[in-house]
Amino acid sequence: MSSTMQEIEALADGLDIAKVVELVRIAETAERYEDMCVFVKKLVKLKAAKGEDLDVDERNLLSVAYKNVVGAKRASWRTLSGGFDDADTDLLEKYKKIVEDELEIICKEVLTLLTEHLCKTVEGNGDETEVFYLKMCGDYYRYMSEFKEDQKYKDSAEENYKKAMDVAEKNLNETHPTRLGLALNFSVCYYEILKQPEKACDLAKKSFDAAIEKLDTLNDASYKDSTLIMQLLRDNLTLWTSNDQDEDQ
Image 1 (cartoon, rainbow, N blue to C red):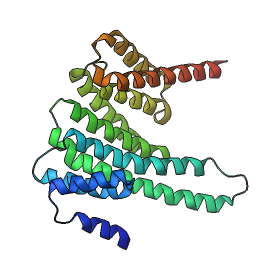
Image 2 (cartoon, one colour):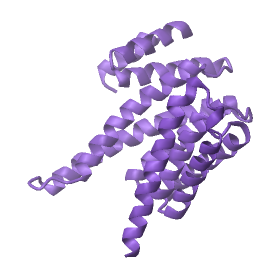
Image 3 (tube, helix red, strand yellow):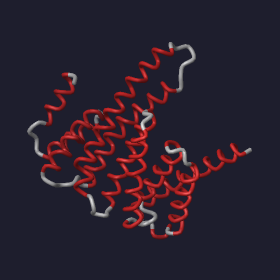
Image 4 (cartoon, rainbow, N blue to C red):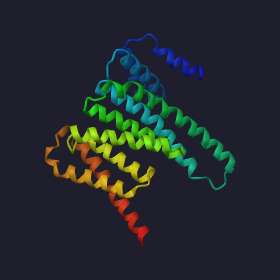
């Protein structure tokens, strides 16, 4: 660990929960997302020690922190994987491996927080938070499956998405943005990672159609989020079905 990172960690030592949350928000505003992850990790452990779950705002801070760090590294990995016409291939592969190692470390870090603390705290609650955490597990196993040829990551992604979907279908209405977001990501996992396009299209279509039927139940607070995800589901369906038609020709 670098001396700078040690200083960042030391900043949160001995602070109460309110002060740690304050640090998380400061890091977010400053767009210091790796620092944000350090502080969020501290927050999760402090609350878990008391047997408490994160509140909705804290949960969203957790999501924002890791999504930004992992998102930037995934973008770098995709660029490096695209290849460079005039680059040394061996050098490029070594560089890509460094990014993959970084990605694996940060994905495993958030998965440890989820599986050892957050999911355990809400297990069996049958609420939106349980769906949210299980979906996050599926997401980060999916991200690792993008660059790691390890079946266990693919299996874990599918397993967590399925668990999340079971809870969502029993407890959240069809237009709930968390349920729709889960359907979107799970269908992407079926298509891109598990290579099961029929299941991907079936899940996306079923979720979209069910939400359309209940569109009049949408409240103002979630209308924008839900309709945006529904549009993404429809866009994917259009793309995937056209791809299948192209392959059949």
